[in-house]
Amino acid sequence: MLKELFNTRLEFSGKAQYSVIVTLFYAVITAILCAHHEMWRDELNTWLAVRDLSLSELLKFISWDGHPFLHYLLCLPLARAGFSAAAMQILCWMFCTAAVFVLNFFSPFPATANLIITFSPPMLYYFPVIARNYSYIPLLMFAFPAVCSYLFRNKEGNSRIYRIQILSVCILAALIAGTHAIMFGYAFAALLLVYYKLYKDKTLNGANLLSATGSSIIILLTALQLLICRLNNGVLNNNGTHSLSGFIPILNSFFTNSFSDLIIKPVFENTALCCVILCIVFFIYMLGRAGRRYLLLVFISLFVQSVIYYSSYSIVLPARTFTILLIFVSAYWTACAEKNISADKKTILPVIILFILSVPAGYNIILKDLKNPFSSAQEMALFIRNNIPDNDDTVLIAPYTNYSQALAYYLENRKAYYDCGKKLGVMTPSENTSFYKTAENFDCFNGNRQIFFILPYDKKEKMNVLIPVSMKLKPVYDTRQSIIRYESFTIAEFISYE
Image 1 (cartoon, rainbow, N blue to C red):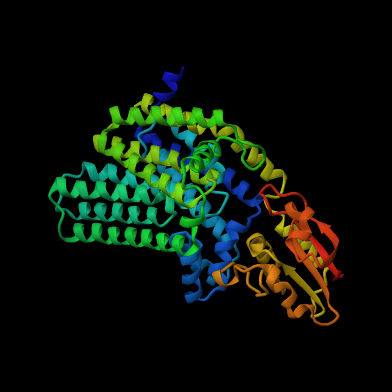
Image 2: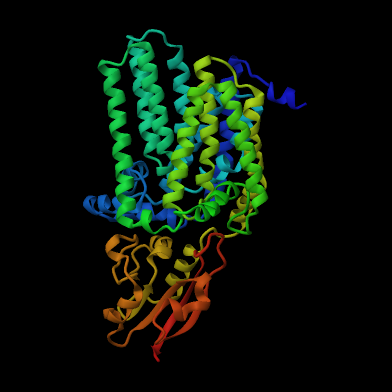
């Protein structure tokens, strides 16, 4: 039965129609999920930055925030045109929808394998629904081998079509580097393959050399920006993972967060062991079947990811870990493209199993997002608009900007103090100061004013830790518990200094 399923092939004459049907079905399902998803701080942080900051402030913010240029570049014109953050959701959804068509129409994999990838939690939820820079990765990772399949078959090195194909793969490599720091390794390895192709065809000159050089410069500048950012933030120095004992928890997180419900329940190390074994199996299969150059593509990608996780992240979230599955898919697809063959079912099977393993926890999160708020920021904003007067005698204070970015978006033009007193929805280096040192200096404490504090719900039992202990607060309203941590809120009225 399994052999029949993975040997399923669709004739080209019907493949376009089939791919369109699958894509439309996928588009409808993910559109419904997007409509039910309430964006949280990591999504709206980017939107607030491109909407509210000047160009010079935005450049400073990007140099501090730690993500490459692509997401900001795509969201900037939408935000400045006056659209709501829903435009960012639609943009990310469109990228993933296009990725599904490319996968089902162009890939050398069996139809069943494509369906499993398409409707797995990464492609059904984490990439299209959560509107972040990860949403662009699937399309770019699928488009690269799709274009390579035509490039490798083109023997006319001096033709215009050949130069366009070289330009296309170079642009794709640069864009992959612009999605996230963890994708720099794949972008670099992909560009090495382009150079190898040009060297092999003896066409490393003229427009081809210009395309490859331009892509190289963009990738290197992106890497430099990310390095400077991490040095400025002290991330490379203060992460606390620069030892074997510190790296093991990150390794465990890498393999478990994709296949366990990180947000709801603890992860288990046996899941990590299972995933490590499957990845090793697939790695060995690629060595024997896909060719050493493409094994190198995977190796460089994973090595760079490991270095970044080790030096910069104390925890690895699901969307990040699912990129390793995309790397396996894209690398093997590229190998098949060079040989002009269909994928071997034994080679693709281990990575398909990894996608299947993500189903239980992934679908659990999807159901929870349909029934519960992913973030409760919109609920708190609605309560404030309906119950807290908007005048000069009423003051709102959200002392932790990092947890209040979604709230800042939903409050729109409502005046509120974030962090050290500045009315700004995004955190910048100048605002990254302790509320303890600034709360008593707010001018809002002068005069007879009604003052309300908005605090993360998960920490409400420790109000006396979050704010100066000399303050006495009266709880007013608690939102529903959100799915994501620190996105539930409580609002409390300031009574007096004790």
